[in-house]
Image 1: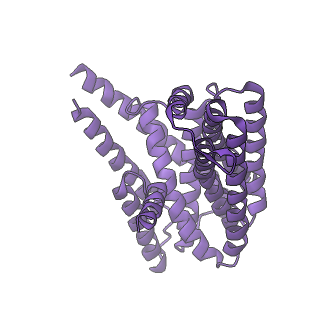
Image 2 (image 1 turned 90 degrees about the vertical axis):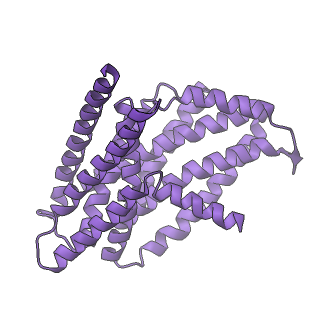
Image 3 (image 1 turned 180 degrees about the horizontal axis):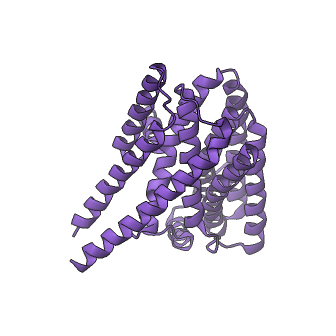
Length: 246
Length: 70
């Protein structure tokens, strides 16, 4: 159960980030040339691989309880951010994430930027793709390293992230447009729920609490976080409706 | 110096985000869980409840600020 949960969480979280990175690379490639955009993408991928390769094994040297405490606290703070935004989006308090609008904004900005050649590359296109992939990829690296190290299996989390990467790249090459049909807001909601669930589970364990039934408690914590999120959306929707009427 | 500040800001935004009170609430809740567990209490129930409270307060703050926005 935990292994499946681990792969699914890494896959979903990574897919969301890769979709956002794809939008940026597409905007850079279409407006500034594919050579610069793809070089930026490759450079960022190498940088991310170095980060994961360096930090992943290093974290396995830290005692598991301390690791779960620190990683659990980080995941909980990080996951609550995602969950909070997802609940606000679902209840209408925040605009939905729209990949097509973001793509149009990126295109407009990239078209008006000045051209500057460095090392034979359009520097704006290179840095746009590099920064986009590095920043979105850092979230993926963070999730893969934290999920993997606390479960003692960075490889399994990397499999989930790798699967998402292959899928998004294949669909991106095929479609050559931002993946607007991906249910990104629903996926972000699911990722927020999963990050918060893992954060609660691991930080409580790291703090010295013992879950009844050990890992078997994880689905119960998941159900609790889902129920909490769904009721928060319903409450906020009612509140918004009342405010609109008043 | 500005690069160091930008690096710090990136990690702050990455982990803490736009509601530092929620992050502080999480740290306090984990501390309380550790204190309960150290005192021999079965503390597993505390963190989910504390997270529910932290999330509800954070959402309430955001909704209140949106409701009063013109």
